Image 1 (cartoon, protein in one colour):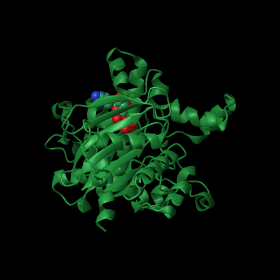
Image 2 (tube, rainbow, N blue to C red):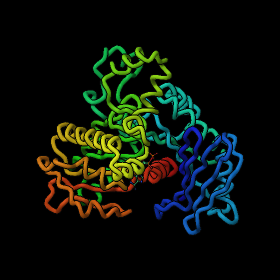
Image 3 (cartoon, rainbow, N blue to C red):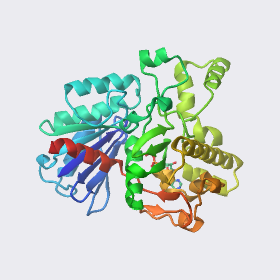
Image 4 (tube, helix red, strand yellow):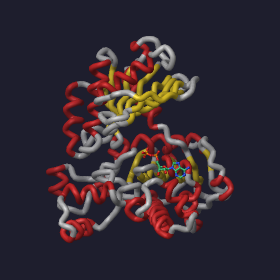
Length: 399
Ligand code: ADP
């Protein structure tokens, strides 16, 4: 069975055609700079070299059309007919309180995803564009929506209600939703598999550290708390997002700098985090390099980033009543031994003992990086959100 997994951003489409029997991607790639000059498609069939093709791609619909044509193409394709695609699974960022699991897409579902746009104005509209393009181009193939928020929908009220008038939750559904759900779900389950333990017996803390960063407390296979909130702005320090901040800081700066709401929003989402602190870059590789060169602002940004992770690990130890395992994933979590080491330093009191040698090994496979006598097993696990989306999609097709 072949599932096309589609993840649309504002100017990008990431895709994978996954063969479920082997869990391998037959092809994967992305379209970048949609609607701009210099749009480009990068495509990698599993058995051939990666190719890059420049093209005029005016919108997501044209982008999806291009993806399908390359999947079918004689030289770079991996299928002969469109009908070989059994279903399409779409990543949708926000499912509000409506969706606590994946759904087969129909008109009513489209309406509800549209209604969630007000919670995720930067994401859901693009996800919807991808869905609509696929419906148009593959009208006879079923489409499934898989939500980033769904895994967190079983969080208890104590974790998701904010300390503001309850009437505002009732009126506007303002609450913690949490994001990166498919990634946290995947790595938590993978950790249980590698520990050869039933996930229902385990307490796991999963750290997804990419451009966006979030950390989740997983108990009996379910998210019981997570650091991102009503939007992906809350929690850890991220590439360009502030993470946790006293809300009064925003009001104060907006008043002193005479900022509009839009400018205040941009300040916290685009000009803060690693970039804002360091003044150098939002990219951890650049910061690590500058840190090596002795740049004090890079040192400070990295220290703050890791200190915040450490604080959350402590908090989730308390929420969970201990932890059996900590997992690192995402571009930074999978690749940066420095960040893992600094985030977990001096936590021996919690039974967390990182093995420096194993931590440095930087294997591309799932690996244990804790000492043999560490009470908490520390993992690095490459995430695979696409596989989760493909498997979720398959459930509906089988039904
Ligand atoms: P996204 O959240 O957009 O999916 P990724 O998960 O790919 O992003 O993570 C991007 C981040 O991972 C960037 O900050 C990048 O610098 C960091 N990263 C990637 N490779 C390394 C590496 N070898 N060392 C340190 N950081 C890395």
